[in-house]
Amino acid sequence: MENAEEWRRSENLSANCTASARSLARLGAYMTNGGTLDGKQIMTEEAVRSFHDKPKRVLDQMMGLTSVYTQGGV
Figure 1: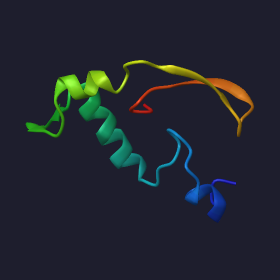
Figure 2 (figure 1 turned 180 degrees about the vertical axis):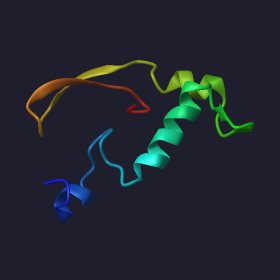
Figure 3 (figure 1 turned 30 degrees about the horizontal axis):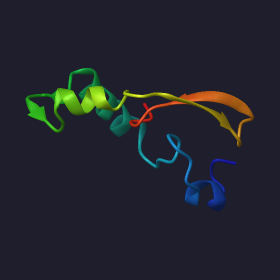
């Protein structure tokens, strides 16, 4: 289903991303290290913290279960 055109074009909160595993891991490493990795800062620590402010519990219509979403979706 993930390779279906409808799935790739849909707006799906935190699951709507086409990327390599390496680039997603690198983004996660930036976020884990407060926005900085290998001496390069791409976001402030405050921005990283704000990704997880005000989490929302939502009934996921696609999966039929309750999920917790944050601004960063991570």
